[in-house]
Image (tube, rainbow, N blue to C red; front, side, top):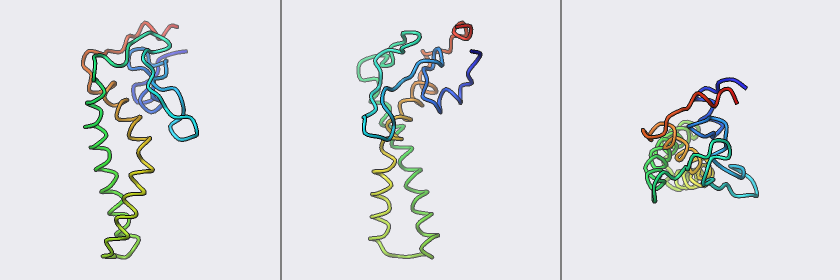
Length: 129
């Protein structure tokens, strides 16, 4: 199959160790809820490295949410010709929070596993499988 790049593994939410197994079951947006797998279906890596490990993903999710809300606020300001209506911004930001919640849930965990977990390293021997 060949080597999967780190960025491709992050975008497709693949295991940081083998870059082949799915971190999540279920779709990000849809009728079936996304669920973090306990183990990688390909290499067997336990995703929750220690009890409460994914609590740290809340900080990553918070950072993603802040960036998204700043972007939405600026976009709303630009598209509304500098409107000062607090109601408009509240509605746009609340809808943005609801829309981005599944994305933030998924990618905060993916970022935590791929970039912020020094104990989890890519194992190149899975390239040949």
